[in-house]
Image (cartoon, rainbow, N blue to C red; front, side):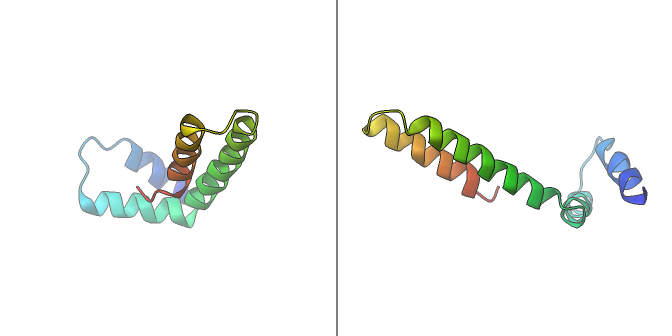
Length: 76
C-alpha cells in the first residue's frame, strides 16, 4: 500500500527531476514492473514470430524479424 501511494504521488508530478525519475525507477524495479514488462514483451515477440512464420522469406520478413528483436532487447 505504501508503494502504491508513492507511485500515485509520483504519477501526479508535473515537473520531473532526475531524483524523481530515479525514485520512480527504483519503485518500479522493487515491485517487479520491469521484469513483468520484459516477460510480456517476450511473449508478444513470440506471437509476432509465429505470425511471421507464415510469411515468405525475404527482405521484408527479415526487417520485421529485426524489428521484433529490437523492440524486445532495447534498453531504453
